[in-house]
Structures are given as structure tokens and as C-alpha cells.
Image (cartoon, rainbow, N blue to C red):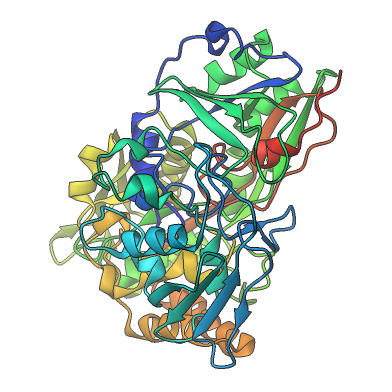
Length: 530
């Protein structure tokens, strides 16, 4: 799931096409790990485009680009291409940004307000294949006042709008001369960021070099390579052999480095969840009582303990239990007896084989997960095992997204999602009925709940914190009554990095991880040991 969606098309495609094999990242000479001012990290997926106009860098940390604002280690907004935080009008409909002086794109051309206007207007253009247009629903227009001031005008007060301005800014002088969907910016980006792309060997690696004229100061890590290695075991092997300086790893593999004094392990808390979609178009999963029974039949704690090895927490909705936005009292404990009672009372009766049926419909449905994703496979198998104890048969199947997507209206999917910046980012496209149809992997469960629609609209159209909290409390309570999804776990992201770069930090991370996040979220600030 990308940002607001359970799994946006771009990141999904990226995960699907991530290389199963990868040539040694050190083949390029300057890429080699352990080179002091060179860093090579292993990640699990790659983007499908490097153009901000198509969604790359929409949540910041894109390395090649900057946004008007950025996040610090505590996820607080700070100025980037803007010289200060925006001035917001009293009615919440206008945001004014003063721009930083002297900023240039890596090709030497000056950055100005026209680039900001171009970026946002192009994203909203109907001809642009950007899966995230709905994230800018509130934006009415954007105007440049001279070269160093930009004014955003909103249709309605949208509380988290400033968070949307961490979005990477593209160069108008290049983008306007090419096809937005297929032009060079998609694979040969030119930005204002701390790094420049040297080479993108698709399915293998992305190689960057430091931008010596970066407005924030030239990075001391001069060469930065991201090796795309989909297989968890291969990433761990390459890290252990010295082929990588760092890698994202599942908790069980990260533990194998516990006694390695030359490496440090970092656990990043996240909003990243694993969830089962329960499509309304299926005669079994479309039954609210079946969904309610599954919601309490599942043993979330066992998943955290066994699958995540404790690196995570139980999930009862898109909001983690330790978030200020979590609604106390919506936790659901594992209760098989209650699950069976719900099904019995609803007329789902067990047959001789232990599987229930009602009105000639057998309580059986398929559950898909992405091929090669062991974490999703383990969650799916555990979920199916818990469901069987309640008399529901779940047939776990693996496939590519090309196979899975056409079936989402009737088959369950083991999906992922999560965005920490604001509850609107995570919930609107996932739960609102306007997205029924699964377009761009939004509302994959084809879920419709008028009370949730109303609350989601209220939550995004007011700046009042108490009013917003009440709205998202309503959403979470409605999901208890009518769970269109079974939320399973929130996952901590685990990284292992060579101890040659000082004490590193992580941020609270979204679902998408390893590329724009991880300890290398601020690699431009690293101080390599000599």
C-alpha cells in the first residue's frame, strides 16, 4: 500500500518486479561496500518511476529531489526548498511559502516558484498517470508570486495539507518539454536533492553520487548504491559477506547478526500493517457476521510472537495502538468461543468435515498473497489456521499482482499499508466508498459503510483537533461493528548496518520501507569513520 492506499499501484508494481537475483553491487568499483565515503545498502524493491510527477518522492526522502518541507528524525515538519514553514490563512484555505534563495537543480538551472506550480498542476492533470491524485483533492489552485513565493489555494480547510508539501519538486524546464508519463524524467531524474542518479540498472541497483552543489552542503558519503535484492536470505548473505554496508531484514534473519560486533541493528517503529481484505462481492466474506467472527478468531498476539519474533504489535485497524489517534476500547482479543457463537447465531452451521455452510453456501474462500513474500505467506497461513478452528476454510494461494488484482472484487488478499503523517493519508482511500472498484489498489475490499464515509469526510475537512479525533474514533468503532478487513499486525522494520558510520537514527516509517526510509533516510548527513 502506498501512502493512503492499501497498496498503491506504483509501489506494488515495484514490489512485484523487484529482482529475484542481483549481480554483485560491488561490480562498479566505486559501489563496493566498506569504502569509507561509499555506501551500498540492500533493499527489497525498487520504484517503477523516478518522476515526482508520477508519485516518486511524494512522502519525501527521495535523495534526488526535495520538497518545500521535509521531516526531521521526529517526523516534525521543517523547511527544505521553502525558507520557513508556511503561513496559513485564518480560514485554512490559503498556504503561502517563501522559497529558499540560491537553490539550483543538479543541471545548474535555478529553482523557482514556477517549478512548484508546474509540479502540482501536472500531477492534477487528467493526462498524468499519477495514482495519488486523490491525495491532493483539497487543492484548488497554486500560483507563483514572482520567483520566490508560492501560494496554494484550497477548496476546503484540509488539516494535513502542509504534510502534502514534502512532495518532491520536478524541474519545469525539462518536464514541460517531454511526455509526462514516458519522458526521460521517469528514469533520468534531475532534482535539487543531495544526490544525483548515476545509473539505474533495473532489477539490480540504483547508483547515486553526491551533488557537490547541494544547498544543504555536499554529502560526505560521495557514492550511494541501493542494491535491489528481493530475497531476504540473499540480502542477509550479501551483508554477511561484506558485499553490503546495510540491509533491511526480517526479524528472524536480523537476529543472526546479534553477536556481530562490526554491525548494529536498528528497529524502526512503523505504521506498516498486514491486513486481510474481505471483499463484499464474495458470498462468504461479504457476510458481516463472518467478518466479525474472523476478527475475533484470529490470534494476533501469536502472530507477533512467532512470525515477527516480537518486532511489532497487534493491529486492530490502520492506527497503531501507541498512536495518539488510536481509539481505546477497540482492541479485540482472541476469542474462538465468541467467534463460533457469532457464526452459530447467524446460521452458519458446521458440516461433518467441520466446515460451516449457510443456505447452500460453504464457508470457504481463497486468500492470495504476493509470490516470494515470506512475511505475507506466514501471516496468511496463520490466519487460515485460526479460521479453520472456527469452521471457516481459507485456501491460501500465491500469485503476482497481475494475477491478484483482477480477483480482488471476490477473493481475499493479504495486503499491507500504513502512513504515519496523518490518519487521513491512511484511511480515506482505503475505506471510503468512492474508491470501491479497487482502482490503483484503493479500497481493495470493495468496502461500503455510510457512517465511515461521513466520518472520513469530517476528519479531513476540519482543522479542529478534537473534531478530527472524534471523526477517526467513529471510523475505528465502526470497523469493530463491520470489519471489511481483518487487521493482523503492525510491523517494526529491522535494519542491520555496518558500524562505520557513527550512531544512526530512524524515523517512524510508513508501509513502504527500505528505499526512502531506514537508517539511510538521512545518508547525506552521515559522517563516515576514517
